[in-house]
Amino acid sequence: MPLIEIAKIAERVGLKPDQIDSYGKWKAKINLDSVFTRSDSRGKLVLVTAINPTPSGEGKTVTAIGLSMALNLLGRTAIVCVRQPSLGPVFGVKGGAAGGGRSTVEPMQEINLRFTGDIDAVGAAHNLLAAMVDNHIFQGNELGFEIHSVNLKRVIDMNDRALRNIVVGLGGKGDGVPREAGFVITAASEVMAVLCMSLGYEDLKRRLGRIITGYTKDSRPITADDLKATGAMAAILKDALKPNLVQTAEGTPALIHGGPFGNIALGTCSLSSIIFGLSHAEFTVVEAGFGSDMGGEKFFDIVSQVGGFNVDCAVIIASVKALEYNGGLKGVTSDLRLSYLQRGLENLGKHIENVQGFGVQPVVCINRFPSDSDAEISMIQDYCRNLGVESSISTTFVEGGKGCADLASKVIGLAAKGFRSTPIYKLEEGVDSKIRTIVTKIYGGDSVEFEPEAVRSMALIQKLGFSNLAICMAKTPLSLSDDPKKLGRPKNFSCKVRKLEVAAGAGYVIAHLGDIVSMPGLPERPAAEKIELDNGGNISGLY
Image (cartoon, rainbow, N blue to C red):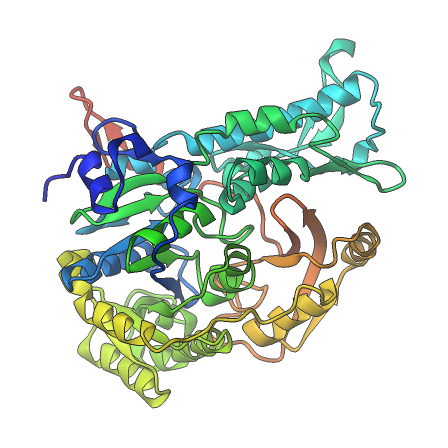
């Protein structure tokens, strides 16, 4: 169906023309006063999470979009909230992240390729702070940075492994102080997490000011406030803090705001977009990155606590391909597919347990692909039935909202049951205790090993008074463990914590597990190779 002008989409969620800033005909930003002042209604929050995916993803965004459209088809007002795509993955393995088929957010190409400039603003604010760090050191280092403790890397919104480790300050005396540095992808920036967690301009400035850029020789943290960088950073982010309003392929209002990495950071959209959805629609459908062990756990334990959200219903996305992958199937075809699927179902079982552990009963959405057999689909349905969990088949990629109608009906029923979601740990527990709780209860591991650097960091965290922060786990999304090769439902394993990092502005401690990196690289055949622009200005190859 043709796109609807954004002013009319705004009307559907109760916004007047002076409450939005239009970015052309199809995009707008919502003024912050309209986000945080309306509280006359409180809708249901539906969290869309998943099993452990294959490297190419299994349609979580497609299903979240389709579910919102289906809810509207059933006569319920709904808003979908998803993250803004990062250019790195768009040009890397996955391609675009605005849905697919007949279940998309529009204008899809613009959303995938820079949108309203929010990620650019995050990068500019972050790199301003990084530049002020090196300038301060060059100008005499009054604050006393210990050079090797500067932990603020620069950012770029691109997958570029060559920038992971660099040396800055080379050249001559006037070119800065030489030191080791590096880049992370913009989605992994703490500034991105701060943008997503902030509840207004004052909160934004408080959080930006707490960002730790490095330490003195006696381990005193040096913050953005210390560098007097906070005001300028906030000014850059003034418009980026406003949620972005667009629409789905069927005209359902959609908020696309913020894009923190799922394996490094929060993996979900901004709190402001969720708050707006809950006060302007009966159902707000929120996607969380990767599986329940990643974006799902962080949403329950971090996002919902800060935002005061209750998760009324959770949807676990599963696909035959992902379950067979978790069962060990490597090839495209096999006479033993059902046996691999049977083994892979244990992975689904653990994710069901995880969601139930937060106090919410999930519904399993089977995202059906054309290659799936009836026998494979039936095996998944029987497995869910034996666990007392409802399941639903989604064909939203092909049929749009209609393909998610059954799922929407089940979501409405579950959301009415009054589940109360709760985190799995208390903030006042120690850092090591909170990490062990996540590893044992969510991953199914037996124990946690803290490497020497992590032990030293934990002592410093305790000394500086950051022990009561939440925990943000940085690990592979491909496994419940910290080893991407351990598929299915691994048992009898231990997770190694390599290092701990305080993200004081975001409000959590990052625990780095395994070999996860914050600057991805491009694959042998990047998705960028398929993208073209013709003489008429039309883009092709972007999915």
